[in-house]
Image (cartoon, rainbow, N blue to C red):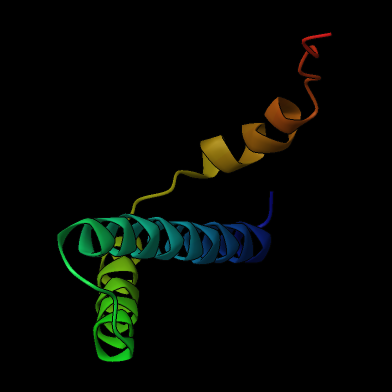
Length: 84
């Protein structure tokens, strides 16, 4: 694998991880706030902004190895048996 393509794959993996972390944080925080109090636009906006900042920081510090990226497509090709 060339160095440039490896860097591109790592960058894409970090971007995907950042989006996943952000979505999970927003969902969990919205559930908690709905249990504790009424939802408001101001609170939702603060949650989204905070989740975005935290996800960015966590994704930046995330270490992704080149070996795991090389083996990832092979793992995705494995078919999951359906529960029929």
